[in-house]
Length: 202
Image (cartoon, rainbow, N blue to C red; front, side, top):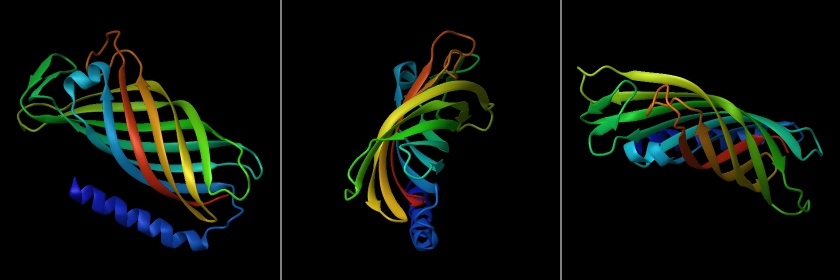
């Protein structure tokens, strides 16, 4: 996990260097971040607190509080107590759950004074979620499922000009038939908490 944080630190540093070359009036922002992945509900019964990384692109027209964002998450969580109620039955032994997410979202930036460097926003949308079991034992097969889901959250940008830091929390809900209960009625829910850096835009 330390190696992962080093990689994200280097990537965020590269974005910060590139901020001076980004046009301040461009409607496009790019960002990278990382943080915690918190499983909820039946997901929490099988998986521990994990980590996640995010990459994003936003488009917001000048002087408009409404924009559009495309982003992707990679998450990883270890199994609870070496046991998991998996896709086709129970899986024993140690392992991890990998979650890859791609979403499209509407972002509303709450109007504030032009002088403030604190800009809160809310966002929400839908996307595709791939959940994969990765047992540590090579003899146990890897299983995965891809489902649609929705998400919503809040965050805020801190800074001005071509580069800003951001903090964000979102709730993701994967629709019925999850990696915990394929074909069933239970949903998988999780919350990523992200700290990152954006460059470009306004």
